[in-house]
Image 1 (tube, helix red, strand yellow):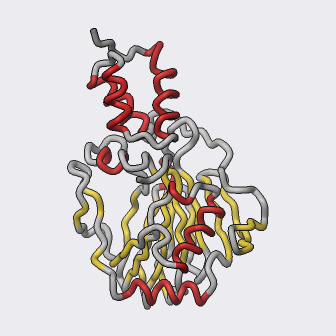
Image 2 (tube, one colour):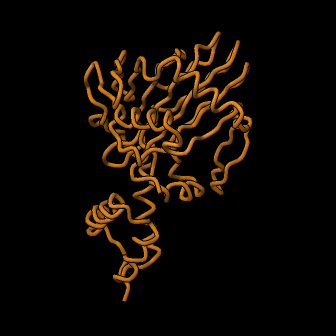
Image 3 (tube, one colour):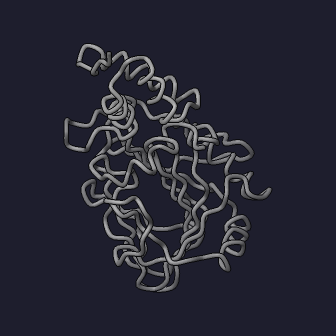
Length: 280
């Protein structure tokens, strides 16, 4: 006889599911295990997927808990001292200086340029990548630790964000030509979109972003947070960290952001997204 997940069980079941996901169990294996133990498969599936998605922004006020990033002015990140120039509490944002050297920025641009393809966004219904007018750029994603330079940068960023390296997606390099932009959007996978589940089952919800600026932009191209009233202009080697997933699974609506149009020259950045669990 199967049993449904009522409210009295939900907290304990969520704790158990979370432990299994942190241990590296796949969502499919957890659902199968719950079904074998007598839970209705649909209820087990919804419990696992609900934990992966997080809470829809606006469902309840977002609670700002302590950031995993060290509060020090100077962060010793793997092989490099990195300085925190600015910290904002709501939303949780940090502007870092000298995350990459000028030479490292140039090398990453050189390694990426011939591999760029038109950037895509995720179709909310299917989860498939598609080109959209909302994002006019070109991009390429390195495999995790693909070569010695990328490995060094991955390890440095992991230490800076205080997140295991294996919880991070590969470094995505993006080029915006003159006029290129990315309209206001969230970096997390929307809990209300059916297509999000395809991505959530491979590491869970995104929790934070680091944008590394690879060049000085002649004009325009700022990273703009309209609800927070914050804009950050690109500066070669600097990086902007922002966190949008707290320890109780809420998603911060104040992290809505845009890449404003490049008015002159080009804009090169790295996007580094980290997940709640290890990425397969």
